[in-house]
Amino acid sequence: MSEAKKINKHVLDMEGAAKRLKSVVNHTPLQLNANLSRKYQCNVYLKREDLQIVRSYKLRGAYNMMSQLPPEILAKGVVCASAGNHAQGFAYSCKKLGVKGVVFMPIPSPQQKVTQTKMFGEDFVEVILVGDTFDDTAVAAKAYTIEHGMTFVPPFDHVSIISGQATVGVEILEDIKSFTQHPIDYIFMPVGGGGLSAGVGSYFKKYSPSTQVIGLEPEGAPSMFWALKSGEPVELENIDKFVDGASVKRVGDITFSFCKDVLDDMRLVPEGKICTTILQMYNEEAIVVEPAGAMSIAALDDFAEQIKGKTIVCIVSGGNNDIARMQEIKERSLIYEGLKYYFLIRFAQRPGSLKEFVNKVLGPYDDITRFEYVQKHNKEAGPALVGLELRSKKDHELLIHNMKQYNINYNEINKDDNIYGYLI
Image (cartoon, rainbow, N blue to C red; front, side, top):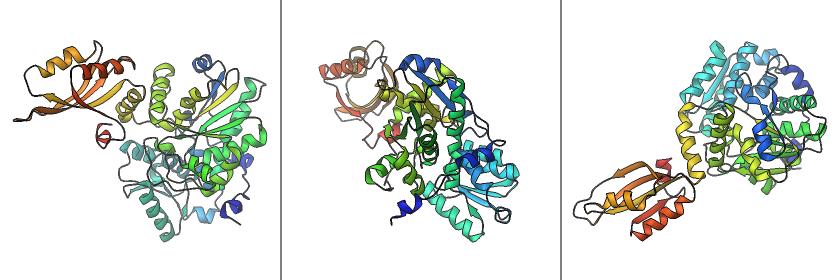
């Protein structure tokens, strides 16, 4: 018998988890969003896990698992490896249970996440920075766990973790009754390692079987997408880690065994689209969402026709968004929307060539946001890196037309070019 089929025999204790967590987590609100409902001509409800105590749902799984450990095991201490939300949920659980915890985080982790983890754990948590990637960190954490006779608390691949995350679904089905007697037609949620989707998906299949359960991953980290295609978890060689709360190289064996049965559809969301949604939610709703938390809303455009007149729930999974990332978020959004472009331009080394470019090639509303030019003596052309922000997507066509008309020697930079990573 395959490992996946053995694992699938595990039973989730979702109702028990709800009881254990009742006095520990915030029962986060389910809110009807007027703007999104109007835009998509349906009723869109947001499950606001960004308002959780640690600003993400991850507390639910960590506390549910740790609170069930025998006292003599818990007394020896617990360990986790995480670059973000799991670490903070773990740390808060350690403080709540009065147990020693050790959090392993990659060395490049943002200082904000390290500080938040220490804040939630206070004196009960020690943070150890090791390794350049999460995979390096996880190896070190598991070795430390064995060496010190402690217990490892995984971020997603454990039935108690999955059961804890399922309580998000318990609350949704409780709260929707105060809004409508109609069943929820679609529920959208992010997928990283698969803990949230396995738990909430299982609860909905049991208590709201008519609901379409839609899983969402970032385009640059499609681990569940390919696991479902392959019939088993696969390890991706490279991933884009921008959506840090939902970017893993390999989903869990246990989570996959549930997700393959409960996910009705699995979609990929472009990182640029996610960034546009983050900005939209901040500017229009005053809601701060992290990239993973924005995916459920970002995906609605792809389902615009199917969801008309329906009852929709989007899980906003977290709001731990470092303000230092906002410039990158804006940049990615502009590029995705077709409003920001980068070019390598070889200007003729003669007087007036730059002036001609500004006056004749650029449109009246085109804005130069970056210009790096090195004059090369004894050469016909000098290279320049030029960043342009446009008012309208259609202005790009005119820009390219003008470059060709005035014989501008240019190369447009795209995300497949090596230099793209330097710019974004």
